[in-house]
Image 1 (tube, rainbow, N blue to C red):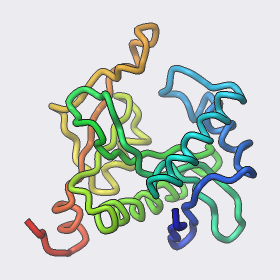
Image 2: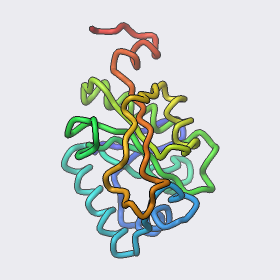
Image 3: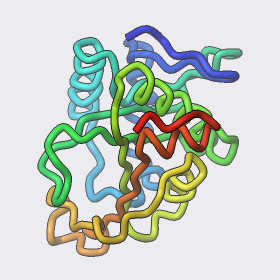
Length: 192
């Protein structure tokens, strides 16, 4: 993928130097509060390799977010295909993020997500991008609202990958953003 640059960030594919940060954000109890499992180092490396290869193949994915001024990797923000989720067609594109806690509350996710929405709607010509989070994950749903997404309460679902041993993490809220609504929000014309 060609890196995407924002005012403060570079969104790029994962590099070897990112392995420590990738493991840290995926094993940190604060970051992973709404996820049932924490990968060990080997599983984290495999996950990073899968994401790296998918980004290389498709040109998008949960890409590394790097502070342009310092070169420090802070987490990921990106687009990804979703499959096997109730009520969503296969290959629906979701937007998602995960940052190390010391970078929360600085607007990085919103800034990067806006760039990815532009990429998705302009370069990939997507008709819609969705996002979802565990009910009660206010940090994530607040970002969804800030970037112009709208809650689709009728689309809320129990995530099939969450085991019954974690019932408080099963229910997910669904947010959507259509290309037309994104264009209208930016002051553009709705092509439909």
